[in-house]
Image (tube, rainbow, N blue to C red):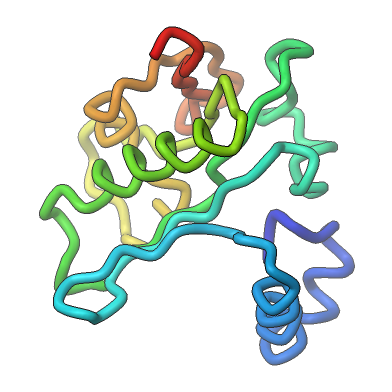
Length: 158
């Protein structure tokens, strides 16, 4: 719920309240993201949707819109510890692009961590990894932070 709420609202609802908010969102029929399963076990998650569903990004200087084109955004990813470094992140990004395209998106944007080869603690890369985005066909379109480029996948051509 981090990106789906303004800062004060998120902080006030940390824990059970935000979990219930997510449950309510899912129960409403909205699809806040995709799950990746291995042998009926969910091991990966990617959250995405139209940018206007994520008010936290509205005031971000680093993640401010690049232009006025309508974009869908990827706001977070999670892969269970024992399944990391197996290419699941790239598969999630590809599935996200298929899902977004099927729902009318022409541009999918993400904000991965570019650690420039330095090992980062897993909790610090919740927005995904730069190299995974590159492998999934995204290109860097802006960089207002040394560690968080803005990456895009143009889906109009497919």
